[in-house]
Length: 199
Length: 194
Image (cartoon, rainbow over all chains, first blue to last red; front, side, top):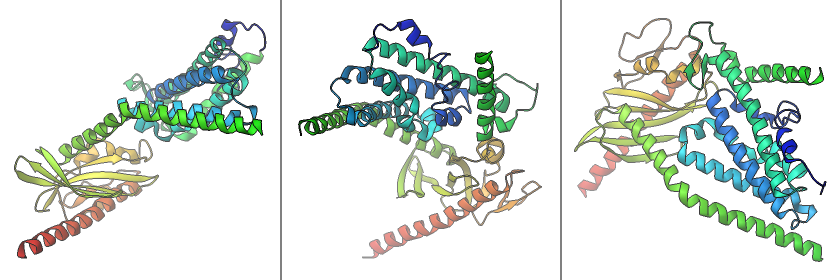
């Protein structure tokens, strides 16, 4: 135990100071792949929020029972269980979204943000602190994905969440919703975050 | 020894628990997942064959399917699901054919991962309109001009490979469907003769 941890601090660190995507550069595979539209990004954020929070609760509850040699294997089983639940839920109730996200929902199992939080935080702290940490990190992931997907959808398709907002101001810049646009947008975004952090 | 025993117990228990939770959760979602898939197929079928009330599966494979579509008590036509290589990935289409195989009613794209803004325009209404009431013979792609004959399909500018792929998928699907149907009919008449 690291002694008393401030819940507020554990919650807010994920938003900016230790933002998993923009500062720690974790979980970039889903970040790049699903941010071609705001709707896909929202689906991904919801799934990650559910999986990260539930896994953190489980891991912080059973941390004393798990022998250290097999802790990663046990965490993966826990994460995979919640990921499968999220995947089946999307397939049953949001079939179109599930189809658009394709393999990226099952791939949350190997998302390093989630396994990273279990290793670095939930396995060493109590349930309440772990929830604060998980919710903060999910929100940080959400902020990054919303920023990226908004930039890409507006520039690349002229719409936001499917609503046309550009209306002839400029011709949509198709490359932004292609993979190349993901790298361009993420690079610019990360460099801006670095600039403001180091100022 | 004691340590390794603990490891075995913990891993076995967590795997068992995970399996149990997923089996329990699957009960709530499985029916809906199947229902969604059927509803989607039904909707696509009704779009490619006018007046669809019900359908029978004649052939159902991973990369090919043939449905007999009914409008009330009469056969409204057949629907063919065919898959082939596009520019980026497989393209899966569904198209409706008249009962006598004289013409194609309409076409829908079920699955594609073509380039947005170019090949992906095969899902747009103006392109699909070009597939309405085409002759169900060997279809040909025309570039740079409107389709004039009933077996011509206009290509999408800048997406020749995708346009060519869809025409070839439909041609192959048609040929396969004709063969399957004559097999089924052939067997039926043999059965009657006995």
